[in-house]
Amino acid sequence: MELTWKASVERELERQGTRLEVLEYSASPMEAPLSGYHQPLSRPARWRQLAVHVGQGSAVLESGALQYLRGDLEMDTVSASGGGGGGLGGFLRGAVTAAATGEGMYKTAFKGRGVLYTEPTRLHLLLGELTGEDLIVDDGAFVACVGDITVGRHVNQGFAQMVGSGEGRVQPKLSGQGLFALQSPVPPEEFQVLDLRGDTLKVDGNLVVAYTGGLQFSVERSARGLLGSGKTGEGFVQAYRGTGRVWLAPTLPLHAGPLG
Image 1 (cartoon, one colour):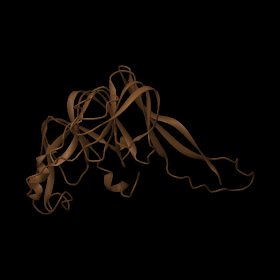
Image 2 (cartoon, helix red, strand yellow; image 1 turned 90 degrees about the vertical axis):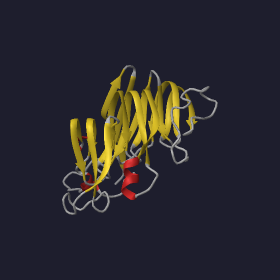
Image 3 (cartoon, one colour; image 1 turned 45 degrees about the vertical axis):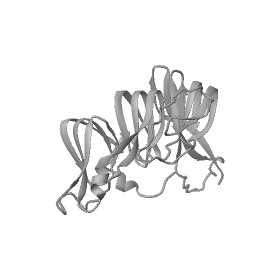
Image 4 (cartoon, helix red, strand yellow; image 1 turned 120 degrees about the horizontal axis):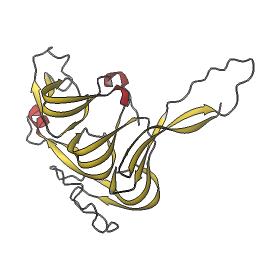
């Protein structure tokens, strides 16, 4: 049976002339069902695509995320050291800062007015807003941001403590004001956004997709068997202390399997 893919807006978020839309593609049969016959239909998994509406400020996409764009938008690849091509005349120079490892963290920067469309994915897209704080993002979760947001890097020394290394884990850091989109196997409805106020959160496993920069992060040893099986490492848990927000996905183990 032939199928056709139909798009609908799953969710959107708008702020001061910028907007993020999640388009969801679902498959429907092209032919009408035969009268009097039962036709079981196994529909393929849905796909999602992010539309980034740029009206003010600028936008940054993960390298390779762009499928096509419409409008008067200048594009440049910005390296971790802040250098890039000449197309933007120095716009966003330094917006993506150097990683401690010396390796490049390349993003694609845009300025002007128009709409950017990302490559379709089976992963879910989580939309959020920054109002002046920093956001530390898990590896591979960043998709795009728009507005007055700087994309930099955060060296997480907590993981260095865990493995006894002198080098920390480098993660993307978003700073400023605007909208952002992250990707995850977990639907947005299943995330818990925990508001910590002088509190402590300990997590067994890599269940946190992002947290605000005001929180102190560490990796701590726990008594064997105290918190499950120690999925962060043999006898280790991730600890977050202070005041801020944490995006936690407790159902992540239920969504195991390759997606993309």
